Amino acid sequence: MNRLFFRFFILVMLSITAATFVVYFVFARLYGDPLDDIARRQASAQIFLLEHYVDQAPADEWLVRLNKVREVSKAHFDLIPLDQARAALPRGALAAFERGEIVLDPGRKTLLRRVDLGGDRYIGSNEDAISASGLPIDLGQALLMEVVRYVVVALALLVPIALWSRSHWQGLQMLSRVADEFGAGKLSARAAMKPSDAAYPLAGRINAMAERIQGLLESQKNLLHSVSHELRTPIARLQFALELLADPPGAPAAGAPAAGNPRLAKRIGAMHGDLAELNELVNELLSMSKLDNATEPQRALFEVEPVLRACADGLHPRPATLQLELGAMLGSVDGDRRLLSRAVGNLLRNAQKYAVQTVVLRARRDGGLLEILVDDDGPGIPEEERERIFEAFYRLDRSRDRATGGFGLGLSIARKAVRLHGGTLRVERSPLGGARFAIRLPDGVIAP
Ligand SMILES: Nc1ncnc2c1ncn2[C@@H]1O[C@H](COP(=O)(O)OP(=O)(O)O)[C@@H](O)[C@H]1O
Ligand SMILES: [Mg+2]
Image 1 (tube, rainbow, N blue to C red):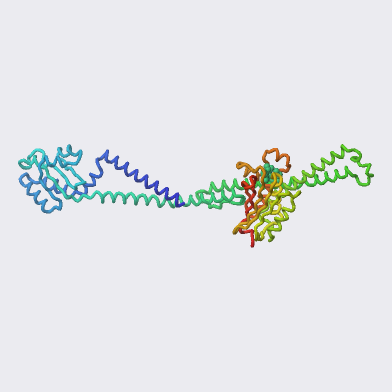
Image 2 (image 1 turned 120 degrees about the vertical axis):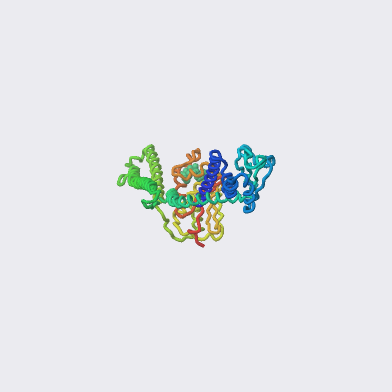
């Protein structure tokens, strides 16, 4: 707000300065130099004396009066020869001087005027000019007064504008806060505003939009959950039916349709495989949708080191070159042990799939941070794919990926599990040449 207001302040000041110059030039064009006008006003007493006291005198008393003026006035009145006066004239003032007008020189604080044009004031007066110096002209002060005037006007403008824009600004800030929260996944974020607020109509629209998006996302989540859930029953039934087909109860072994028919037995075997895959997909989808709907993990304090060792031991088959580098004093985590070991297990299985030879599982405590790193020496992940691989069903289109099976859900699940604990899961480049997946858990969930 302050920066915005400061910019606005500068803009207003610049506009007012520009306007001042425009006014000055327009006035100078239309009505003559405003500075000359100011100087004339400041020297008005001396000009008055000259025009209304000296000039009104009868011809023979003229000089007497001029001398009286010299006595009473602080300015210094003199009679000087015309040539000298012409030489001292400010630029561009000769014509006015020759017409008999008073010519001011604000810089030198002087004025010059011919005594008279026709010489009828007194003999020879047409060869002289009246010069007054030391006039009370102070342009600096006059300009300062102008500046003060404009600054006061500018401030008087700015204060109501500032107050007015502050309420707008607060409304906009609230909206951007809501947008940030909503974008960060807090779908219940809404803007609460009074109908009198300037941004109220906008807030209403944003709230309606948020409501709709929240509804859509929730129905999508529910759909995913229900579909996966509903699929379990037919899958179980199919599995059961296949078992029966291969080996019906009560029938002699030879009576089974598959028995003695190797082609059928092979087909049934393949169907078992397909069903197992389908089952796994459904299970993964279900755990993903559970994670989507969870806002808090089930918390319990567990020690990190044994869990990581169990993850490594759970690998099938355990790669010969799996190295564990677990730092000392890894401490405990207050969270869902099953979820976190599942995330680590996913990363390890991926690393095992893609590694050429070596997989390293590292963990260390770094101040308020627990870092779990899974490194491999495989092909790694190209820079531009490093965010996308965490999307559900996203797999890099490499021949290796197709050969390794999987649905592209593992990383998505792992990231959701880590995020649920307030941590981050990122992929980087491993010093081994392949990919490094890094789980970082913050202070809040780790304990000594
Ligand atoms: N350690 C790794 N090295 C190289 N690529 C990887 C690695 N881990 C994951 N990937 C890439 O990320 C994709 C997504 O991984 P994941 O979500 O676990 O799905 P899945 O393992 O089912 O393919 C994988 O298909 C693979 O292309
Ligand atoms: Mg995987």
